[in-house]
Image 1: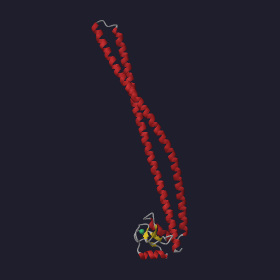
Image 2: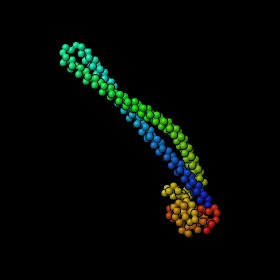
Image 3: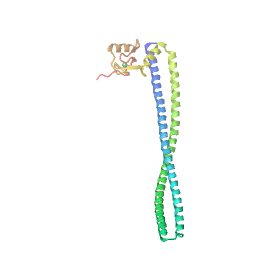
Image 4: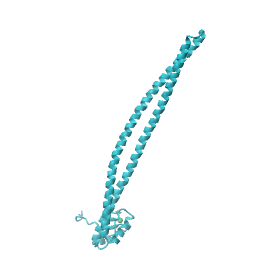
Length: 243
Ligand SMILES: [Zn+2]
């Protein structure tokens, strides 16, 4: 392999590497996205449970009030029955006063029960709304999960293809060239950088004129003196226009 061929091999290795890194970052993004969705689903569930608990508490309170009302009514009935049996005027008045008090209590209880019923209905409406939200989100999540797993499968397949390409390139190339690439690759995902107008495109620094001249002769492989990346001269497609 002459230097130009070696450079082409390195560029191919770099292309495979860059694409691999891109797909891996997409795959990582996918698991992050799934985690966010799971968290949000958990939040919906939490709100739903909370509302169910509140509703149960309200129902329990209401049942208690119903029992109180029944009890009060039966006491009132008994008291009214006793009105006919009392002997003295004083007893009659005392009993009538007790009945009036119970009536007042009953009317307050009825008001409370109506208010509680309002709250119960409000809580039921809210629960139904939360259930709808939860169902809608769950459906959205199912769709998203399907899309995401298709995307992940696609990414995994591409990774497999890139691995094959990498092996293919490595088989044809000299092991020392591969090692040289891997050494720089361990430092940076971009191991091979073009040099354009004497500027290394890996680190954006100027390279010395002497080195730039050597690059243009293609008789040796060079590393950038600043970032250590393997560099090659990126010959401009058209001659430079001097303004
Ligand atoms: Zn550099």
